[in-house]
Length: 180
Image (cartoon, rainbow, N blue to C red; front, side, top):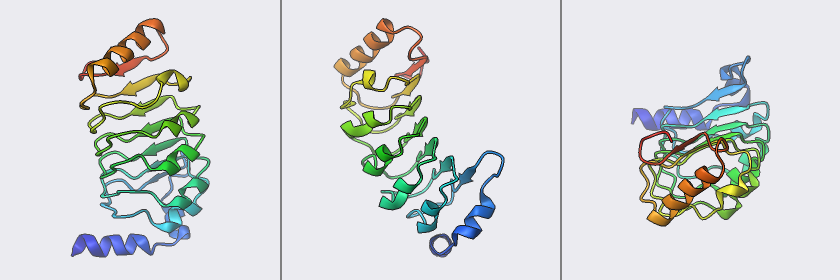
């Protein structure tokens, strides 16, 4: 009951109240560990936010109005209940870091290649067997984490080959809990 009351309070919080919680020096809105069932509508009005932490909640989707958050450079969706990467994420073209580890992702949309500025992608501890994208399409990707996924041997082999062909391009390729 306490969690339900808290979630109802968060759903009704105004944009002005949320702006008070934004760390002014870094433009971070930290709603992590709030056990949210959904993202408050007012969050999408905060276009000045660059880093949005929605981790450790019960989110299964993002509102379609999240595409207004065009200034986001980091989106933290770790430890939620996402079965799919919300399609709206690929519209956030300024993302540099995307963390969707510890969810229930079984696939990625091929449109993720639209995130051309992406430098760090954490997909660890999901249910991914394949990546469904050519990592070469993410030209600026430097860090990729895929540990804890049931990736096929073919996918693992292609990631290792990519790393071998492009030394220095992908600094960290975390496949089995080891940084390569």
